[in-house]
Length: 294
Ligand code: NAP
Image 1 (cartoon, rainbow, N blue to C red):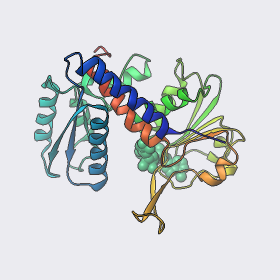
Image 2: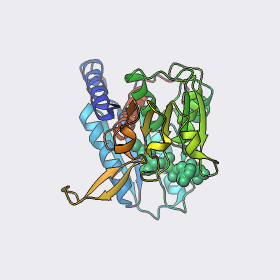
Image 3: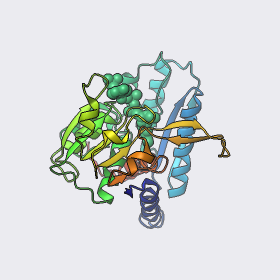
C-alpha cells in the first residue's frame, strides 16, 4: 500500500505558489492575490475553516480579508456586501463560508457572486463550464482530488471509478471531472447515494473508490477490490485520550483494514483536507492572473 500524501503534495504546491507570488508579482511591483471571505454567524466549524484559509493565504504571501456578519443579517444586507466585493478591484476572489443560517437562501447568495470571483467554483456558471469542459474555477475538494491523482500518476482512463456520495460540493463534481473527456478523466463512473441498491458490491467493483458520505468507517475491507485506489474525503472527530486536543480525526473508510488491501489510499488527516485547502489558493491565483476568461 502507498499513501496518497495530500499534506506533502499541498506543501509542495504552496511553495510553488509562494515563489510565483514573490518573483512574478511582488518583485515585479504587482499586488499579491487577494482572497476575501464572508463569514456569517458564529458556527465554530465555519470559524475554524475561515481561520485556516487566512493562515494559508499568509503562508503563500496572499492578502486575505474576512467580512464578519451576525447570524441575523438580512439577505439584502448580505447581497449588498457581495455586490461590494464583486465591484472591488482590489479583491481577486471571494468565498461565502457555508452553511448559512436557515433564513438566507444559499442559491440566491451563491448566484449573486460574480463567476469571475467565485473561487469556490459553486456558481452555476462555473458548474456549467465544468460540465462542458470549459475552463472554470473547480470546487476545491474535487479539484484537490484530481490534482492528487495526477501527482501520483494514477491512471483514470478506462478505469471503473465509484463515487460514494453525491453532494454538490464533492460527490457530484468529482464524478463529472473523472468522466469528462480530459487528462484526468475518461473513467467510467458510477455515482452512489442513499438510494443505491447493493452499494457494497458496486464499491467492490471499483478500480478507484472515492468516498464522500460523512459516515465514519463506512467502507470496510470487504467493500474494496484488491489493489484499488481509495480516496477518503470524510472527516470525523472521535474522542482520543492520547492526544492533547482530546480528539483525533478519522474518515469514512476503515483505514487500518482497507490499507492492507488497496494499492493507494489517502490518510485522514493529511489526505484530501490539505489538497482542498491548497486548491482554493490555486483558484485565487488564477483569479489574480485573470487566467479564466468570462
Ligand atoms: P453530504 O452533503 O452530507 O452528502 C453525503 C452523501 O452521502 C449524500 O449524497 C448521501 O446520499 C450519501 N450517503 C449518506 N449516507 C449514505 C449511505 N448510508 N449509503 C449511501 N449513501 C449515503 O456530504 P459532503 O458535504 O459531500 O461531505 C462528505 C464528508 O466529507 C463529510 O464527512 C465531510 O465532513 C467531508 N468533507 C471533507 C472535505 C475535505 O476537505 N476533506 C471537504 C468536504 C467535505 P443522498 O444524496 O441520497 O442523501
